[in-house]
Amino acid sequence: MNLAAAAHLLQCPSKKQPSHMAYGKLCLVLVLTWSIIGNAYAETDTESAVKIGFLYNFFKFIDWPQSVDTSGGYRLCTTGGNSLGTSLLALQDKTINNKHLSIKGGVSGKELKNCHMVFIGADEDISKPIGDLQGLAVVTVSDKTDFINQGGMLGLVKYNNRLAFEVNLDVANSVDIRFSAKILELAKRIHASK
Image (cartoon, rainbow, N blue to C red; front, side, top):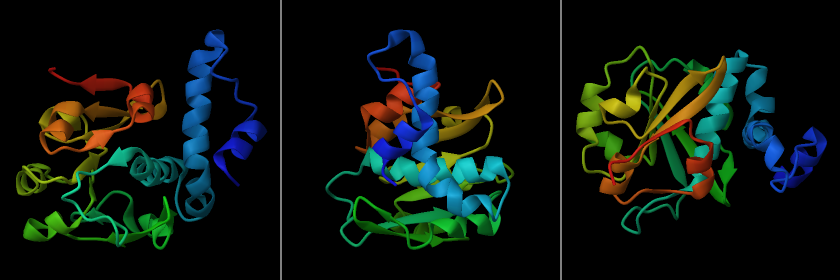
């Protein structure tokens, strides 16, 4: 099912209806995560499935600099024992923009440079992976509280009892990673000094 068909089934209002702006954004988030939640839901609880959906869909709305090779597909890595556990394997062998997605767990140190995106669990010490990735065009994502103020790019947060995300544009811009307007529009908070 494509996004347009899913949106129609959810009966999301069009963007031309400003009185339904908040509802429209919620519908867009649901549609973005819909394609992956179906597979992940059976293996994990709802919150983890939504986090996995966010990770999967972030790839669709990020442009890496030309120096980063994405021709062979994308690599999503985790450090240590991430909070999503084996449920993240629901993404293994998915495709994003006609590119294969692979999952690699327990990545650390110099090996992090081979990842396109790294998920760091809330219970992990983020200082080491953030330090190892300093200056590298690798997207960092975590569900750790206040992640974007600690050098991370995308923080998964609870907002009004729903999962949302925050963006640190300064960190992304420093390594020439570009987030699409769709990500920025849906973000609950954007950290940008410029």
